[in-house]
Image (cartoon, rainbow over all chains, first blue to last red; front, side, top):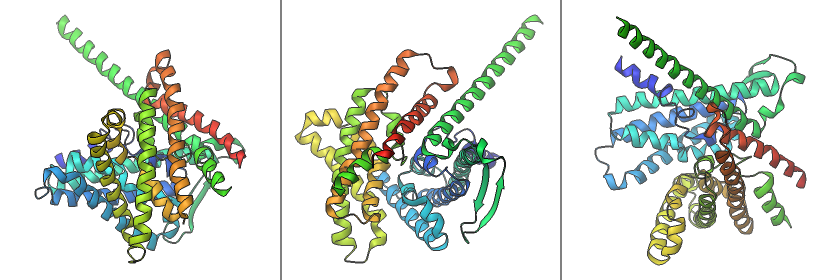
Length: 224
Length: 191
């Protein structure tokens, strides 16, 4: 149960995008289509799980003074390997993600988890933490890309990265009702800003409701 | 002539922050005050230009002749981190006034994806030496321009204090950036 909490915390409480605001570059850049968002999300999960486990394994033999360069080297090696694998098996996806694929090296989410979690916990917990944070990243980027693609084009399509064939292409409403701005670059900033505002509003509503409940509870207790 | 087109296109048309989405973290983090934005921008121009020069040299003089191109990513990030560290020590020792102005921004720069992005793109775009120099100066110049514009807008926004509750902070900053990005799409007609 406690182990499950590590994963759930990573997805909701310390969601890298909406709570910690880390790694926004790749979120904004790769969320223009649903397919590229899934590709980016999976690539980040793979990198994060591998680096977290490796860093956790070497945490006791890493001298404290040079831990950051050690992390950078480990992360760069893992990203290079993932990049080669993706270029070999999913060449079209690697081309779409472009420079953002090698730039996972400087994605603050990876470094932050290495420093905050993997350097202090055992490999299994670090693996679970990476899974949770990675899924949180995947959910965020997919949610942003779904909103952008559906509102921006009125349709939703998904391309199989291995065969580069279209798996599905559903038109939800005619193109003339779509707002193409959201599929463009400026739309990425706009949509993420609106989503952040919505999440802030929901959080504020939850806290006021909790405060009211507490006030009501204490009032009834006082009456007794 | 082609160099001028390259410079205009990388400063205005495909701006590094607004169109290419690189360097968003420092863009949102250091844009609350104009003076900070100037410091960050100057530090970025300096570091991007010289680390691109170093990584370009490393790639074509060492990695390519030895067929070690696959080490590019690893060696670039190491060279950037080492360079930033070295510059910081050098400034601290020999130019303390400049260190006071730029010092705190230098460590932040290592995590700026513009630095690694430009170093990698110099290679993947197959730039010649002069194109590389122009590109490595123009991209951080575009970053500085947008950072400066945005910090001025943001100072006004914060002082107005009329932003609705849920939009406060990063949300309104992102929406402002969206408007700025829309304005910059007008430059697409330049070329």
